[in-house]
Image 1: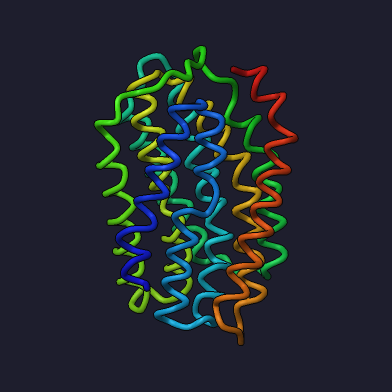
Image 2 (image 1 turned 180 degrees about the horizontal axis):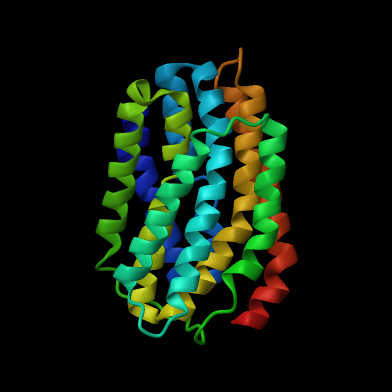
Length: 259
């Protein structure tokens, strides 16, 4: 089962999000990609291989790692707002900022509820810090030639993190489960194909979707210890879906106005 999760589920979900984004535009793509379609299977594989107590600590640190993803999103968007900034420069700046944020978070040990509050505060502040899209957004379909590369990136990330979980320990496993593979792949390709405005709109959609991600990690961190993985993961998924749909209803009029 863990092998199937690593090599089939994550790339398949990345492909579905990519195709949905090409059909409905960057806001929907960002909103969908923020759902735990990468970190969720990684945490499940960790729970199956390392035990639920280990996975609970990893989930708590994955929750905290949302702060690093917010930093990634803000730095990429601010870099993309500069007329001379290309995709490579924006990605380099954003990944460097993510790495520095992870380095800081390694030394941070917060109670789960306090970490959840910090993540919510950062998500509420992020849209203003990201700023407006620097160019009009065009939600046109794009060629699918890059789709295999996106799927490969998801598979490599999942296999790498889960194989290294025992050596990294639950804290680092949780932090690296939130490596911005979706942000890097989707935003980078979208920036190149459709311009910085499309990329920034995608990042805004991702930030809105991370509320559900935070709830997913919170539920896992609270329910996994002393239990099997089935019920906690089902409960976390149901709660995340409810929050995801609520966020979409709340933000849909605003996102239409931006597009």
